[in-house]
Structure formats: C-alpha cells, structure tokens
Amino acid sequence: MKCETVLEKLSLYLDKELTHTEREAIEEHLNECADCYAEFMALKDLVEQLSVLKEVTPPASLRREIYQQVASEVKKQATLGGIDC
Image (cartoon, rainbow, N blue to C red; front, side, top):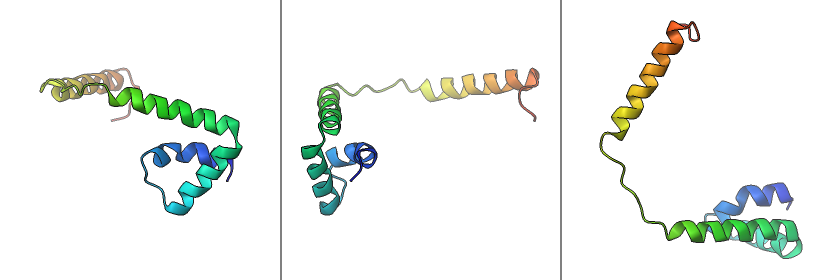
C-alpha cells in the first residue's frame, strides 16, 4: 500500500471503519514505514487529547445569527456587484 493511501485512511483505521483486509494492509505498512507510523501516532495522540474535551452546547440563537450574517454578506456582495442575482 502506498503512503498516500495509508495517510488518507488513517482516520478510518483509528475509527475501526475499514475492512479486515484494509486494516491488515495498513498495519503492515505502518510496521515498515517510519514516516507513516509517525503520522499515525500523531493522529492517535490528537484523537486521545480531543476525547477528553467536554462537549459544548452552542446557544440556541447561534444558527439564526449565522444565517443573518450570511444573508447580510450575500446582500452586500450583490450590492457591490460581486454576485449576479
């Protein structure tokens, strides 16, 4: 398996979303490739660090505020001729 393919699938590998055959191929590659193994360990460490963070519930008004800002920006762009309406 090529490094590019392994690196693209590392997240799926960590999440156990690959077939048995794909997992074995990645494990074999990681045992042979120090660069990919280092990337794997960095991603694994990051996932572990993120898993201890507390989930934050955004305020109920957040969605409305985002839509208002987007609508305002679209209107401004249209006024400036940036968007054809």
